[in-house]
Image (cartoon, rainbow, N blue to C red; front, side, top):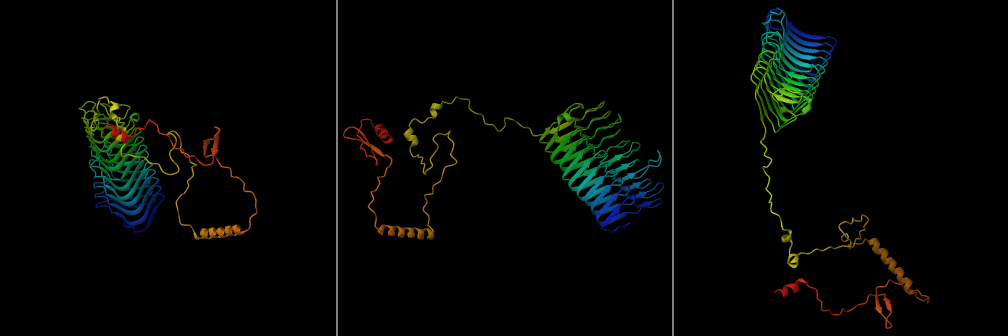
Length: 479
């Protein structure tokens, strides 16, 4: 089925399906170049191998700018026959899966003894900028038989958000199966998993758990979020995290490769974390575990510059723990590779001798001050004391000589001519009033009285036998 359109909308249980019920492969569904594809209210795009058929499921290939699945809508590839489920490839800038909708590739059985069925298909979501699975929206590969569940690959440039119970990425096996869980690879800039959402490669049957490989700038797990590669009775899968900036665990979140959740055998899987910083809250019970029941505990290898809020403990506690224990087997190992920081490294040892401050004072002040000078110019000066504040209302007098505009020169010449005319006019013989000025000095009169003068008095000082000691005199004295 090839659909060429710019906009595709399916609503109210609408379907596009390619299936086989006989011998031969099911057909494929292709939407090569659409602006938007919307599925709402139980609508679906699917390929299937029906019960009794012999053949593989067809592939689903969609390329669009925006892909939205809402209200229990589905894009599926399934097999209930002898063939493998088809693969699903989604190329979209924005992918939104919400409200119980899913993208799935599954194998199923008809009866309890009918377990020899095909392998689950693979799901790839590539060339995306953002991916969101919320309110039960999920991407899932599942096997109910003896074959491995399919793999999930998300190549997203910017952000992945998984939020809400039932939301997430799942490559699991069912309880009665014997196949292994699939693998999940995620490679965005940031990953946020919160409110019960999960990335899981669990095996609830007899098979091994799958592997999770996540590469991101930052990874946040909040409010019962989980990364899980657990098994009921076989070896747990492995989790590898390569984080460029920060791994943050909050409010009862988990990273687990625990084996033997059904209190059976199986070794715990391994956890490898490379992150500059790993941060949790001590009292919030967020754990990193590789435990086992009857088998051996897994290994936890952490390379970081610092861990805050999480501590290695022998067993799980109500606090935030890092554990690799086994109930009845051999405990696993926890290796934390952090920089060996020596608090005394790079410090200089200070002398313990008491300093004689008198040796720091220059005895020959003239020699110490020779060649040094301090000049304060201008009309402002310095405050009287260090405790005195500066006056913000101080005025500035501009003493600079600048060129005067021609208009001012003409006005001055005009006033000068007016003044000359006034001088040439005859003046009346009125007595000139005496000018009163502030006293600038004083002298002693002939009768001993003090007389204030309008001009300062020049006084010739008399010699004295007490001379001021200055530097040149000291220099000549000690020659």
